[in-house]
Image: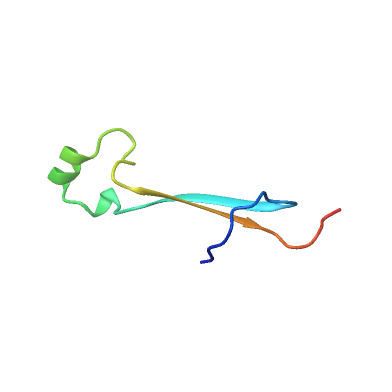
Length: 58
């Protein structure tokens, strides 16, 4: 992981996202029924990464 100044990306960039958290299928059925509403995304952390590719693609 790298920390630095936030500057405008120039050229090709990649972006990806995911949800991190426990899988509902690993919960006891009664607990799953009580906690999970809708799509089940509640309680999960959203993680996004953006990477600027080096070099020019002109």
